[in-house]
Image (cartoon, rainbow, N blue to C red; front, side):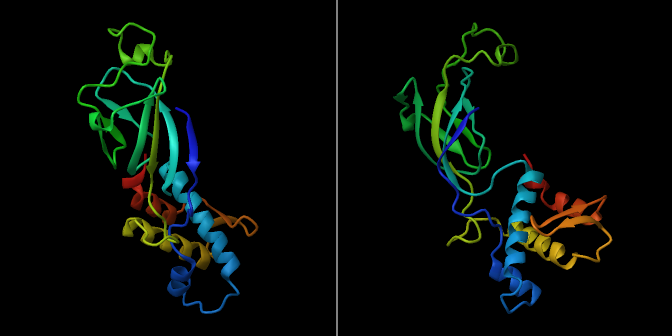
Amino acid sequence: MAITIVTAAASNNFVTLEAVKTELGITGSDEDDLLSELLEEVASTIETICDRTFAEQRVIETVPGYGTTDLLLSLRPITTIHEILFDESVVDSDLYSFEPESAIVHAPNGWRSTHSSDQSITVQQIEGSETRYYAVNYTAGYTMADEDPSTLPKALTRIAKDMVTTFYKGRGYDKAIKSERLGDASWTYSHSEVMDEFRSRLSRWIN
């Protein structure tokens, strides 16, 4: 469903520039621009592989109700639900709870169906027949490496750090690299065991 960003993410970096420089043993600032580009590239790569956004942001998402007890949101982990509207009326927050990691909003008494079709018809049959929506105003995601404190799982930070150092050290001579473009800090790996390993390590966060 539609998502409107209320407050954009402050940062998308999974690891800080200082942490990467320490990892690589770099003390000067000559490589800062390149490393910053690599940090952005790694963030984009991780989000593409996992098919999700990780950085904390506040959004309003419109979602349908199916007459069941659960609403499924797109972003996770949910940290706060500010309000839920239905027909411009606020839903009492005492009537629901949420599961941060699964991004499910649970209402024991059920959510009203927002479809025009008969309630006896299955969800699959009435998909796309929504006439009204719930508008969920919520904050979800992690505070990233450049923020204090960061709530990123340490395993994610470690993967990002390994990716940056791998891309940096692999420039120009790594046979696994098919092509590179310094302007956008983009490297293409062809049948790379290294990238397969990173995908495997990221598997728990893939949508």
